[in-house]
Image 1 (cartoon, helix red, strand yellow):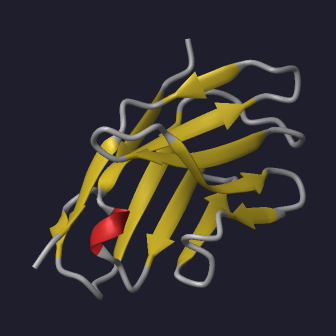
Image 2 (tube, one colour):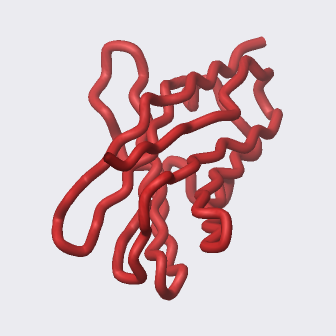
Length: 117
């Protein structure tokens, strides 16, 4: 059974930067995508960013575009989310999701990010 492990969550101040890492234990095929989602307390889980494994095409939500960058390292089977200019509204539990090209999905347990002065 594949496992995804997120790490890097922390308590930071507004304007700070933070990088989250998702480590994937299974095989990531070239047509697969890896996503970052987040869920704030009392809100639904929302899409943050995604990357297609083969061609490294990246997609971002409007709320993070220009501040967050998603990176994939095929050699290490990791996906990072570099977050800059953090705002209090970025506070959430961040989840990594691996979607295979045949429709199987895997989720990590999440890592908590809190942005507060």
